[in-house]
Image (tube, rainbow, N blue to C red; front, side):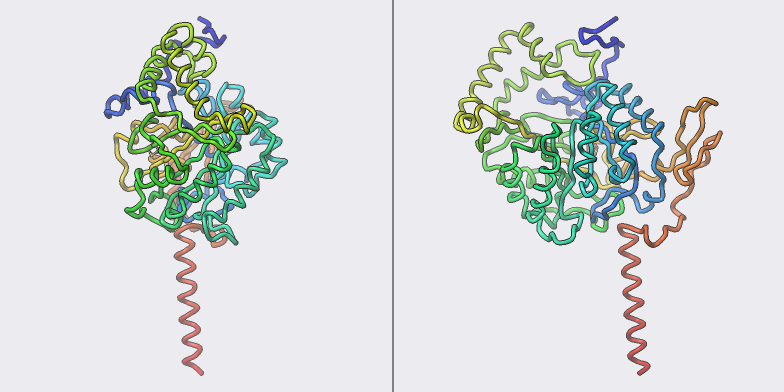
Length: 463
Ligand code: SF4
């Protein structure tokens, strides 16, 4: 059977697993979008464990950089696996480590393959090596989104406040200008920048014409980073309050739910000519719209196709369509001065606050209803779980189909074999000093300077 979109109808509802998990854990309220409007918010495809930075809250493991880069055919098969699980429209994040450390030809092949499956591609990088030429080639290959991670945890030389990094953010926006990419900024919120949050948000507000999403990740004790658990001052409410303060208008972070309430907070803004409004104020209308969208038979698709869905609402739910039109009229009226200045041009900026879990404190209900997954050898896995047990996934033997049958790739050696090798026990591997990062590097530096002190003192005593 062929669906109205021309795609083969499989009869499978990709949203069902998430919807069931959210229901089981009491999170399928009337304003829940997970499992209704989308089967998964985002899936990360880690294409390298190497990185050109050493963030103080890095989620990579101490030994992650011992893993060789996953071969392209395995990554292409993983994209297919994600498509089978979640269908078209799913956002696939090409990440790492830093994905810019791989060959541009590999990156182009991944972007093209994601597009050929009708999914969205997002390139997640610290931006250092994301040159204009690289971005042009990726945009030409069909890249949709560029997610830029910039914050103080990266310890970039010459920047000692969060706000001073706006210079880097400006340069990145300029580098991507005119390529048709949606720009997303990721910021880790930790004790070192928490008090600067309202000022940072004021900057994002000023650049809202160029930015589609600002995402804040709260400090979590996972990975090799030298910082550990977050300060008690940093909570979901203190972060959302600081953001509202920076935007300068009250924001409702509970009008729409995206997955588990302890994991995510979401809101959205409309911007035109310097004016900004929050469109998510009518909770009753939001509930009715979500229920109506849930009712529409979209099961052959992964995520909602907004234009087609609006057409269907107009035909099938005329009363709701009229109420939505009335609401849109209200937004236009509130934005009227800005719209005059911008000659009718308005844009949307979304805000997401993401509360990752500490590796030693994973909560079953949240892991089971996770909306941010990592594509692994054994299927999609909650990002918090993946970060907590990273080595067992990145060093697991990976199956690859060849003309002479299946082979298994070994991430430690980078070689193929006919049988899956027993995973190496990387816990005992010695890391070459120049590749040490995170806590292990910090410990070595400490030992090294202690030794220097001891030698210095011994020298003084001998004279
Ligand atoms: S990655 Fe962790 S914090 Fe994020 S949605 Fe999944 S379980 Fe929740």
